Image (cartoon, rainbow, N blue to C red; front, side, top):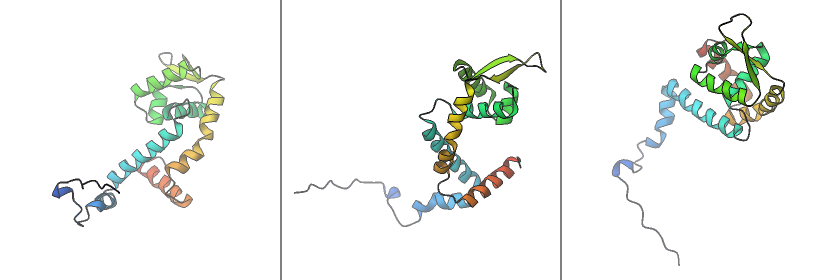
Length: 164
């Protein structure tokens, strides 16, 4: 004998009425690209967090190591501006990388008032590990898009950010 639970009472305003409420976000996202982009950013950030959960670097730390490898020693201010990471977040990011032995702070060669953040020998393997996870991260974050759609998205977002 099966026991059925009594149905849960809901407010009339929460009952499905066929009025399209269940489709509201889809319609809103089509009308408001700002809302769609914010929601997409949240979904991508979740995918990134899940992908990096087993790694020792945060997204910001990965980006800092990548920039230092690509352009050489940089001040925290340069890193913050170029990577568009808030200064207060950048300080914690660099502190964590320094505590892990992946970077060191040295006097900036062109500005004696500033410090240059420099990679250590240990940074190479950590960056290689993080970079090896990027393809899986992109596949997870953008699985709904074809390769051509990903290229189009990259181009359009770059245009919005004025980076192209």
